[in-house]
Length: 145
Image 1 (cartoon, helix red, strand yellow):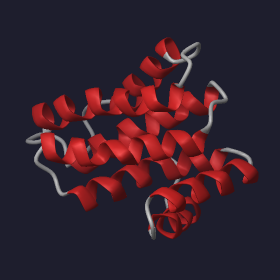
Image 2: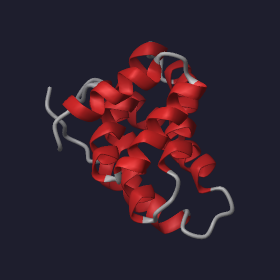
Image 3: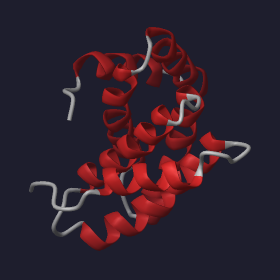
């Protein structure tokens, strides 16, 4: 199944349009991912692999936050925190959603400074034990889109 729907672009555009001047952009970024991913997965799951939808949504959110020069670590934690709700509401496996989200975030994180990469990995590890190392590996192995 190939990707038919560009949720990455949609997510990026929404972040750029709505989060520039908010007091807590990372928290809002997670909410945007939830609002995009659940209806996106439920409406396209027969035509597009939910993995592509979740990954693209998270990649788009992270791209927007990178462009806005917002905290990628806090954004990553916010996105991963929403994966439980996304998995429950879209009837997906929570562990799969976490991995898919990290697969989407990793190529964007690779574009950031090494300091921002390390801070993001640390923030993920601090909030989701064991996930920081998984994310570190993805940053170094997931191909650029």
